[in-house]
Length: 141
Image (cartoon, rainbow, N blue to C red):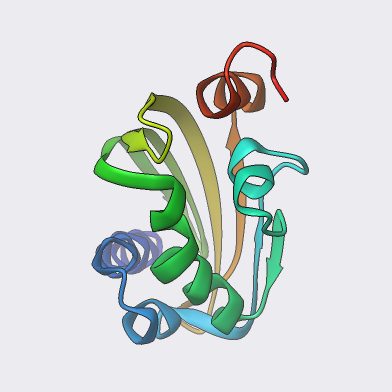
């Protein structure tokens, strides 16, 4: 199951990169959740929740909202996909140009929990202070 789980999450990343809401929605369960740290810079800047519930909300964020902040040169360098049963841990560094023209670079760790071959829950971890500095400047907003 671990290799299949890993393949499911790698396929999901391709769907995320497509910015196609239908394609993104198809990789999540109806009741999926995406949990990021409360008050993270992306949620604050976009006035979006840090805890999204439902595949429609997650797909809308990835297809529409994400691109309002991370406007170009978005790149994800993967450092590892670690699978154990229905759980996949992804280590990555994301870089991009922000809407304010600043360069963004931050490390992430995401834990994907699968159910019936679909993503049921994502727990996202990142350096929130670093994110705030890049998005809002040294003041940390």
